[in-house]
Amino acid sequence: MRGRVTQFEKACSYFSKRGMITITADYRVSSRQKTKPFEAAQDGRSAMRWVRKSGDRLGIKADRIVAGGGSAGGHLALATAFLDHINEPGEDTSVSTKPSAFVLFNPVTITTEGGYGYDRLGDRAKSLSPVEYVRPGAPAAIIFHGEADTTVPIRNADEFCTDIRVRNTDLPMMKLVTK
Image (cartoon, rainbow, N blue to C red; front, side, top):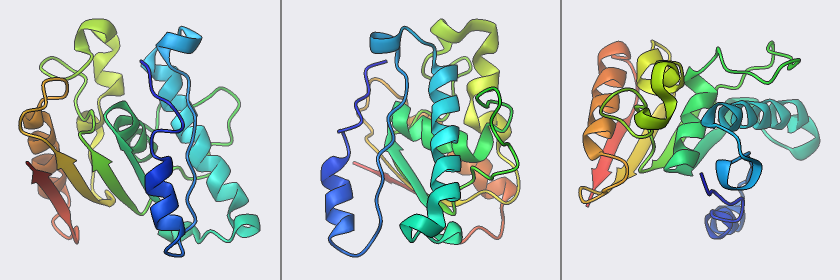
């Protein structure tokens, strides 16, 4: 609804100083562009395609891309791996949007009933819910989520982690860190 491209600049700077290439991606939000989360998910997937297509020029290794974000931004990171049916019209869908791993902070993992945003998404809620599209081959992830979060229920992150573990028994890591 109100995300800003500058939100993770400090984190990007931290990792950049340690030799990583970092990119922040802007996306459409309802407060500025009067759009729905579907367009934001399209933007996240488009951004990942741009990173992959620009990888050689930028020195990015395609098999070492990590997607991250917090709250709605974490949802968009998850969209890159799980919401294959949501794409900007005309995009080259042969370019993979799936990252190798995730670093997520209180991500929206469920948009169906009991999850974040259900009241605004209605009958389209399932199509935007990453937990509905978990499948084998999921990227490894670390999730940081507060038990006192009143916006994104921590039980949604727990359910997502459980679904990932059940469908990906060979996954090297899926960790939910709470405080």
